[in-house]
Image 1 (cartoon, rainbow, N blue to C red):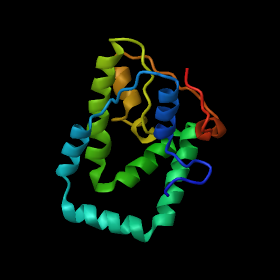
Image 2: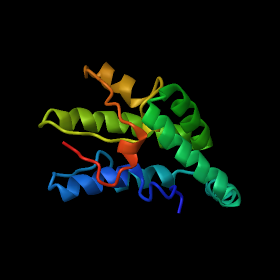
Image 3: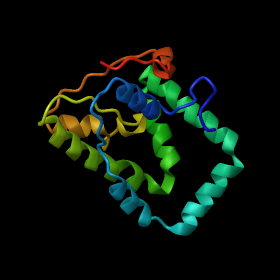
Length: 160
């Protein structure tokens, strides 16, 4: 219900489903256990307050999520970074930075096994603690793949 009508699934769900339909090998760069470990450390009162705020302003949250898709499609990393940092609020360190360091380590490990295609949320890419910088520090050469919004939200998206 968060996504717009022209994009009923999140971008990662769309990519995952397309790859699965094509018989591609699928794996995650994060584990549920790692994510749950981060969440367990959150202040419960703060979580409840943030959830209440989200529910009170659900239409604004939906607009914000769809705006992030637009920024991702435009490769506007500077604005995407600002929005992601603002949205994660007091949980920024856990939701962005700790996860980015963990994902960079996992990508480093996996990339040495064989060729992979890695997809992450756009908010994880930019910034001093973003995946682009962290992976470059590990010796990776990074290049963007540009897509038009229509290619991103097309349910028949191709993955090669």
